[in-house]
Image (cartoon, rainbow, N blue to C red; front, side):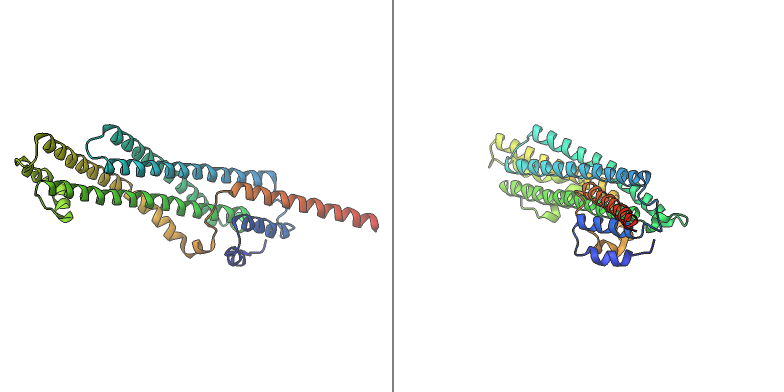
Length: 293
């Protein structure tokens, strides 16, 4: 099979995912005389299984995005309604923990698929390096890696945004007791474990006892939130770095590959069906030709 990778990469810039995969399969079919077993049942089953795994990971990523949506809602509820809300905090912690669990399982699946594609590239005895299946797998894995990294980045951005809003809330509440403190001082106080030293000023007679307790509880809740946020960010830091390195190693080719892999299995199956129909038509034409002769 002659190599049309460079040509296909150039064409893929202007193709949808469906057109891209169908074009790959059609290109492979035109060369099938040299690779008669390219679309054998076993061969296609291998590709189909791989694409099924891709869809499984995509479902996990959609669930992660849904969990991130829940986290954003809980963040907004906590910030809008002052005071201690155990149910909000419980739901937030559950959603965050579920997101982290799915992050680790998805990372393992994506990394395994990256390693499988790398083996195809490095195997000198494998014809699949130039095969359509290898190209489909490579494209899908690269797209999955990018999508996974984007989900992690969105999670990280939301955590950092919520952290800043928590610090602003702390600063506002402390200002009620005459304590003016900058975000930098809040950061330092949290790191040193001295944030609650600032609440000592709340003991003035300016505030009623109930207000003093509410203020203390609010500052403590936001302080605890910030500590949890920092822990979750640090916990996923290595995972995010791992995905970044994978993307970096894949290089500029990412710029030439379709990002949308939502209907990969359907598109590839449709294209495979078209190839089979084309083969059937070709055989029919040969029979007609023989009859005429």
